[in-house]
Length: 274
Picture (tube, rainbow, N blue to C red):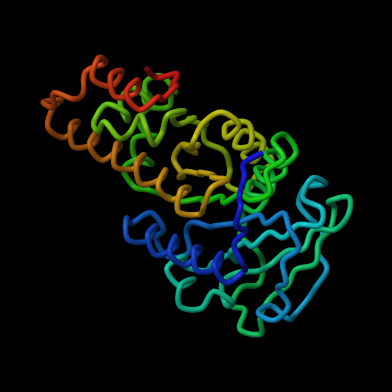
C-alpha cells in the first residue's frame, strides 16, 4: 500500500483537478468537452457542503472494493479548463455503497452536466482493480487526447508496444525515468464500451499510461493528480519529437540505447524498455 501521511481534503483535491484540467488544455489535449478526470478517496470525506444535492444511481460495473469511499469525477461535456474556475459546476462526488453496485451522487445547484463522463466505466474499473489488488486509498485517473501521441496511433506500426515505446522513450533522458513502465498501446475500441474498459484496466496494471488507438490516453497515479498529468506530458512530448523526426525524414540522432540504459541505471530505474 502507498503511504500517504497527510490525506488531502476535498478542497485540495478539487483544486488539483482544476490545475490538471488547465494543464491538459494548455497542451491541446482536451479540445472542447474532450477528456475527463476522476479521483478516488478511500477515507470518509465530507462532500455535502459543496455538493448538497443527492440522487441514487446504479454503477456501470460492480466496484465492491470502493465501498465506503468517494469518487470525484467530471461530468459529461464539461470542459476540463473550466474546472479551475468552478469545480462544483463540473464535478460530481460519488459515495459508493456497500457491495459496490450503487452509489449516491452528490452534486451542486450549479451543476452543468446531466450525466457523468461517458468513459466513467473505465475510470471506475481502474479504481476498483487497483484498490482491490493493491489496497491503495488514493488514486487519480486522467483521460486526455494529446494530439501527437494520438496521431502516431493512426500509423499501424506504432500500434505495437515494442515499436511505440522504443520510439517515444528515445528523445529525452527524463522519459525512461518518468515513464519507466512505458505505454500500453490498445487497439481501437468504441468509446465507453465494455471492451474498452476491460482492455484499459488490464493495460494500467503494468504500464504508466495506456494509449487508446485513434482516440487518446488514460494515465493513473496513487501519488497525486499532478503525477498522472505528468505522465501525459512526458508521453506527448516524446510523441512530438517523434512526429518532428518523421517530418524531417528521420534526421534526428536520438538517444542511443547505451545512453538510455546509463540514465536508467543512474536513477535506479527498472524498466522493460532498457
